[in-house]
Image (cartoon, rainbow, N blue to C red; front, top):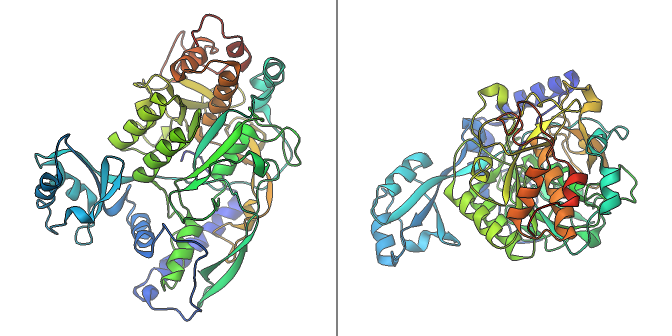
Length: 504
């Protein structure tokens, strides 16, 4: 996920202290069985102890993939005997029955070889294999600020009030899927085990739905990453993104989102600190997991994209990414577009860290109906963190603390940060919400998703036509014409809604 942190000095100190605690907790004694009551989850778990431990190892070792997991696609026509031959190329000699299928791609977990790049290379060398890759992680990394008053300059700079005169917040027949950390769909408490500093104890954790996004507007929610129960956001990122897209116009915390009448489909493909902490604590892990643990593995992301397309989403928002290409991601996005879904993808936040090419944003330039989205601040200059490159297609407000400080960030309703801050909180809660400022290309992409929803409700139904209209009506920024810093320029909702000269 592409959300740039904005950390006050006090929180930075707290985080440093938390990291010191983590170093101690990750000693050899951390896997001793804790004295705690047996925990029985309310629903079957997807995030198993083995998977949670793999995510801890990935965080410890700064890996961009899940250790020991590889994704393999066999060539067309290869039957089970051919698949078995290919698998014999691995030292562990797995069987076809060990494969976990995600459409036409199989996920394989090898406990004997944790370096997934080695596994992928070994499988890719087999004549029966079309491609093999590590199960890459797309990360969410952010520390939100305390809540404050409404400063939604982003809606003003896009002239949204006059755009709403043309189309008043889209309509409820349009479904926008947010493939992310989730949007909470249950207002109830669940019991989870967690480490309290000396032992593991079961705690009651309350959850609530966003008061500015009514439960009736959340449809076809699905969790691919944590459990088979209701979708729960324990990070806040997916909720913030959803608020930009479709926060209610009659609300209590902040102003409206762009397409405030649409249905939101919460598709959870990412887990963060608390999901991993709970599962590791249940397994007997004594201590705190790394504060930056978690992510969104490519198999889950691809499954989430396909699920959204198959269940009626006409817009899919992907505020996530990573430095490694994944054919699985690209194929899923192309599939979604073929099913009639427009896809908005954040560009990445690493401009000052070498400006690497980020995926799946880089794939968008080759798929008509999917768009990569860069970020601008309130002065309409490129946000300092926003990646650039020839694959950048469009720009939208993403906020920048260097361009207006707090008031230059993107303010939307999400979880109250102080209730689950991993540097200060032992027993979290996820039932309180506030208007919170974030910055990142994660925040820019949902602006494009919201505008796409307005256009679709206006009758522009083909994803490629939505993309063409957004490009054609953009406000040119930077060098004349398309450029690597802003793409085709800044989105212009009102102009796009007129839709002159674009085939539906």
